Length: 368
Image 1 (cartoon, rainbow, N blue to C red):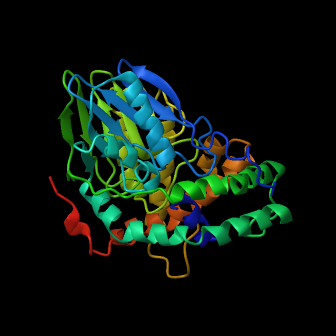
Image 2: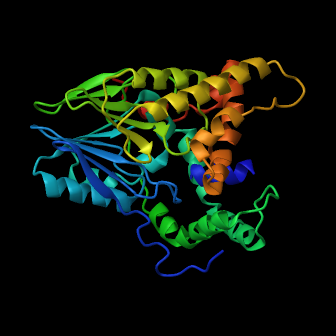
């Protein structure tokens, strides 16, 4: 089961020509003058598509999370050209997971002088073992998708649990979308950052300042958030994901603290890494409370020598899944299963187990 989950995030009905329609299509919204957010309307559809934020200043353009797929990067480039003649001067990568950066090459091809910015850890993970392990997992996707197709046909998931009709429809569409996803995988490119800060930094775009905020361990060890103080816009990367958070390789106790810190900022528009734009902070409060509970349970269970301690999610799960069986299944796969070992590693002080680096390529990162 864990192999299935890891391959899906980090990496039936018959397939038809229409199955892939809209798979990577972005819808754009101007959240402040010269600040545009593009995202797919259906945030749960797989493969997941990250939100992109474009900030136009007097001197140039900053792009935050340019896209995980070239089809997305091409749309971002087209939107920039439709809105301004100014060059892209900064491409910011919120964290190392490929659905936020491996499709942004079309932007850099068009603006080769742009700085590519990722936190020091994110850069290392992109150049190092984490990225290579993701790419290795992607070589196994043909077999995985066949297993998913078989599960839909049998009406049972890999753990033997029955699939609801809504789940069968969801996973059947995932299988039908696979050819389009696979075609985009072949176009992915990992770019080497030109700036790899350790801490928060501010960029002057010309009469518009953008803060790249590093608040510590969170969804990954190298998350950058984008904050526009004048416009009160906050883009979080996967520090915040809705409606179902991702718990892979994360640091729940510190992550909750980071979310509380972001929630204290005077932001009126919050752009999550995936999901609908938010205009209040209620979801951030629910997410922080969930992570704090997980971290507290890990503290109690960290000394267990009798197998892995059990975690209870009943007090929080309904706030994220409601009565939707698809959300419940994804909450199990994308949050509950991966968050438990991550929380125990954090509680036991074994942080390096959550996102292990091999140390072979980190020297390529230009620490600022």
